[in-house]
Each structure stands twice: as C-alpha cells, then as structure tokens.
Amino acid sequence: MTPRSEEHPNIQGNWKRDLRRNWQVYFFLLPTVAYLFVFNYMPLYGILMAFKDFKPRLGVLGSEWVGLKHFKFFFSLGAFWNILENTVVLSVYQLAAGFPLPILLALALNSCEFPRFKKIVQTVTYAPHFISVVVLVGMINILFAPSQGILINIMYRLGYPENQYLQVLMKAGSFRPLYVWSGIWASLGWNSIIYLSALSGVDLALHESARVDGATRLQRVLYIDFPSIIPTVIILLILNCGQIMNVGFEKVFLMQTSFNLSTSEVIATYVFKTGIREGQYSMATAIGLFNSIVNFLLLLTVNRIARRFSENSLW
Amino acid sequence: MKTPFGRRGSMQVDRGDLAFNGIVFLILFILFLCIAYPLYFIVIASISDPLLVSTGGIILFPRKVTLDAYRKVVEYREIWIGYRNTLFYTAAFTALSVFMVMTAGYGLSRRNVPFQKYIIAYMTFTMFFSGGLIPTYLLMRNIHLEGNPIIIILMGCVSVYNIIIARTFLHSYVPEELFEAALIDGSDHLRYFLRIVLPLSPALIAVMVLFSAVAQWNQWFTALIYLRKQSQMPLQLVLRNIIVNSQEMLRQMEGVGVVQDGGDKGQALLLVNSMKYAVIIVSALPVMCLYPFLQKYFIKGVMIGSIKG
Image (cartoon, each protein chain N blue to C red):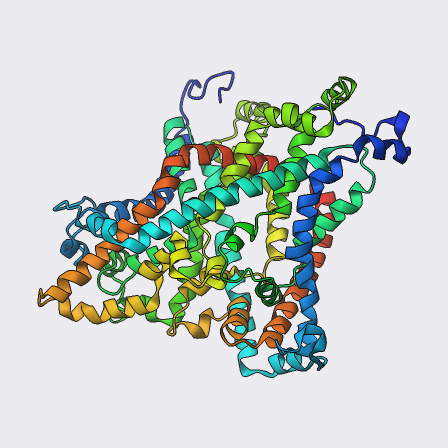
C-alpha cells in the first residue's frame, strides 16, 4: 500500500473550508471525548487527596492540606521496602523467565516441517490466552491442592520431597514460581505470535543461498532467522522493562492468601487494601500516585533508550 | 511454504539436519504437553469418579465416568444467575464499546479536520495518566454508580488503544477516493460512515467485537469493587467464590481427614471438588465454541496493532 499524502495540497491551511466540510466529524468523536472526560479526566482531580487529609464529609476541596505527610508515612513504614521488593522481584522474575520462551517457541514453530503438527501446537498453545484470571488461579489451586492436586501428585512421584509437597500452596516461597510459571503457561503461545509474524517476513532467497553454500538447518536459524527478529526482540524487551513497577493486580490479588502475604503483597494490592478495604483514601491515593510517577519515569527513560536503539538496530 | 526445491527435495538428507528436525519436534512436543495436559486433565477429572480424582487415580484417561458433578453444577443457582448476568453484561458492553471504537476511529481517520491533533493528544494522554483506583472509586460513588450494574457496562468501554488500531485500519483499508466520490454524490459523514465505511470493515468490527466480548466475559474486578448485590454478580465472581476463595479452600483442607471415613460429609466434599472441574468447563463453554474465530481474529488484531508500531 502506498502512503497517501497527509493533506490535500489545494485545500491545505484552509481551515474554514475544512470546518464547513467536516464539522460532523466532531459528533463522531463526541461520545468518546465525553466518556474520557468523566471516567479519566475527572478522577485526576481526586489526586489532590494524596496531599490532603481527605474526609468524605468535607469533600476533596474542603479537606485539610497536609503536604507530603502520606508519602513520608508510607516511606517510613517497615512494610514499604518489603512491598517494593516484592513488586520489583516479581516483575523481574517474570521478565527473565517469561521473555525468552516465546522466542524459542516461535523459532521452533517456524522451523517445523510438519504443517499439521505445527497447526495443532499453535491452536493448543494459544488457547490459554482466553482463560480468565479467575479460572487460571482456580486451576492453580486445584492442580496444586494438598494431596489431591494432580500436579502435586506428579511432582511427588518424580521425587519432590514429601515433607514439602503437602503445602506448596501454603508456602510463601512458592508464590513467585507459581505466579510466574502459570503466567508463562497462559501467555507463551500468544506472545510468540508477534515473533512468528516477523519471521514470516524473512526472505526465502536468503535461506536458499545459505543452503547452496552448505549451511546446516541450525546455522540458518542462528544466522538468518534469529537476527531477523532481533529488532522486534529489542523493542519488546525495552517496552517490558518499562512495565517493571506495573505488576498486574488481579492475579496477585486472587492468589494472595494469609500464608504467602510476605511475598505476594505488591503495591497494587496494598493500595486496594488501604483504600477500598480500610477506607484510608488519602494514603491509598498517595501510594497509587507514587507508583504512577515511578511508572511514568520508567516509561520515559525506556522510550528514550528505545528510540536510540531502533535507530541503530534497524539496518 | 514451498521453496523452489521443495522442502525435502535435496538429494541426501544431512544427519545434522535430521537431528535438528528431531530437536525442533521435541521442543514443540514438550511445550505442547506442558500446555495441553492441565487443560486435558480438567476435562477428564470433571467426568471421572470424584474419589479416584482426589486420590490421584486419574492421570491419563477418565475412569468410572459420571456426570454427577455437572448435575450439581446445573442445580447450583448462583452459577446460572451469574451466567445470565454475564451474558447480559457482555452483550451490552460489546455493543457499546464497538459503537465507541468505530465512531471515534472514524472521527480520527478523517483527514483535514481542524483541531484533530488536539483531540488525539487528549485521548492518548489518558493512556499514560489516570487518577488511579481510589479517586475513580470515589467519583463513581459520588455519581451514584456504585452498586449500579450500569457501571459494569461503562467501565472500560472506551479503549484508546483500540481506537488507534481502528484508525490505522481505516487509514490503510478504506481508500480516501471513496470519500471524495461520496461527497460529490452529496453524501454526508453519517451516510458515508454507515453505507461505505462500515461495510468495508467487517474484519475490524469482528476483531473489536471479539476483543470486547472476551474482555468482558473474563471481567470480575469492576464487579468486586462496585457491585454489592449477589443477584448482580457476573459469572467470574461467582466462579471466584467456588474455585479460588481461600476460605472455601481451607474448609476443604479440613475435610481431607474426613474423606477416609467415607461419611456423608466426605462424600459431599468430594463432590464439591469435582464440581470445581465441571464449573470451569461450563464457564469456558462459550469461549471454547468461539475459539476458532477468536484465534483467527485475535491474531488479525495483533497484526493490525503491530503495523502501528
């Protein structure tokens, strides 16, 4: 598809004429603009609560200013470092374990010579993407349930120590592996799609000439296929790094029990508890704001790096 | 994909290549097993004898097939109330969000609209900044949407990301010349949108319908925060109470000792257990039926989305 010029030269700059011609377009945009105003812009004003002692009776404006009190209090909490650590460790673990596998799957699928088998593997590996978080966590609980869970039983038969096998779900130490590997189980296939589409763009002539030159299959994967997806890999890696402080709330919350609280309490769940459960609105808003600011700074940094990289790495 | 020589057309097959093929096959097969087995197990466990399931007797094939668990699920009223609610929420949410994404996507895809770039900035701003959970919650409470099922339909029905996908799609698949022609024929924007743009974008609409429908089908968090009445709960929240809730689990763990006696309580607990498998299957049924379409159109969505990149 050829790129079309952004504007028609003969009417460029003639915005009165454009307005007469296109004013109806604003009606198409109106519902969304209005929606975003109510659901996204109006809550922004509630951020003021983070700097006030919010009392529902007095309203946001009527409540007393307290400056950075809530932030200071949060940072001074003993739990603060624990929560921060949990958040970062969980993210980094997830990234380190979950990032390379879809690449491997995509390369393997791309090199698979049996179309029907490939199709079956794709259909099955994409499927868990559509499973809801509730069902996913439910499956973890059922499959690892003490003494009855099938995966526990299989692990036991494979030699997992008996004194530990009864309480996988109740050990704080198993929260992270369970969280990360169940996530990989659910998203592995799906995350490989983007690499597969990059691989489908590889010029077949490259493979032919490499073959004529006597390259083995493995060499062709390593020196033709893999380099062709490196730009995609780098961009995705960088974007993922920008999400490090952004642990998904829903799954952590569902997996949280009183047994694993010491590893599973992350910023998002803490905000939920202090805010919605305990009604400390100002405190929770402050923590949420702190998290958003860190997120945004990470995103900015990472975007800058991405821009530099995509200039250098896209030959 | 065919190479000029055919895939296996070379004269002698290299031994290294054979090993390579074997390794590729092995990798795929292991990943396949790891992902397929838990899914398969849920299915066979849901139709097997509960006692065998709980003692680890079911591993590869269903044994002593029984539909008791499904019978129990059918009798469980909350599930069907949740089912009905979710069907309603999903239908309404999907209709609304597709309406929003198509109108906004069209609005942004039109050229020569004054102030359009400010509107784009206004929209993308919301992708990066939000008030956060608590301010949003308090606002919803103030405008009396807390406890009102309408919030389930409204919350998240605009996705700026999807709007940008729609705009990209309309830019590249609906030729600008059509608009010029329609204008000369005396058509206005509404008629052009309904008569020409929509009929030209069935793939886009399908992608958006499926994106919204699956998101809403799996949604539970909004209901957890904003809804209070049991009768309004979506299926996923009912499911959570059955299969995730830790108290429920603890109760079940206490029951482990009871099971050996074979008493009534033990029997009941066993049935509760196998109900969990059955309920997972029942809740996933619509998604499973749609899966062939989902796979096709979701991949398409990923592709349209990545053009933008």
